[in-house]
Image 1: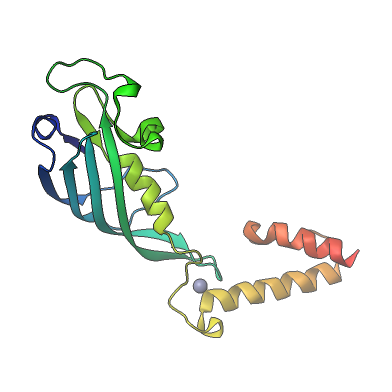
Image 2: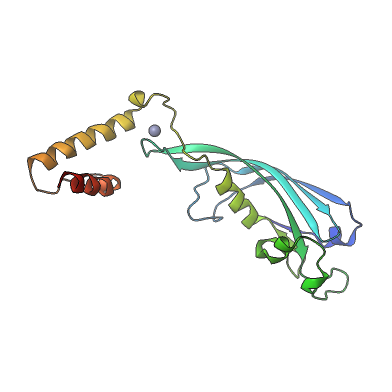
Length: 191
Ligand SMILES: [Zn+2]
């Protein structure tokens, strides 16, 4: 998601660009499983120190239900507003010195906010961070009542079986590895 802002940087403060995006997020983050493209609008605004990029996007990604652990789709609204700074002066190609930067100090130090020496503004890293920020704290599957969730009921039954097995014998039962850590705790409790 790269934008050449050479022309915009040559324009006066207040000049704008607007882009409608419909982008694949494949490869953006190995821990992120996109279930849709990212759609929305990106605004670029020429400022005294560079380009202010702001956007509002929608995307659906895969999350795990916080109760039954099954994968569930999470619809996320992604918003950001970030100030990008040019690495070079667009008219001369000269590298700009840090003390020539007129924006906020925190923007100066963020590598994700640099417009590179080819005048490319890349929103990928900002988007990636914003998507994680927009993730629901505890994703939930469609079942409001856990007793109606077949996956959750299955997990409960598995737990009950494992519990019975542990009481009955010292053999390690075959269980879902995601529960193994909990069982160790439970066993320690009983000792
Ligand atoms: Zn669930």
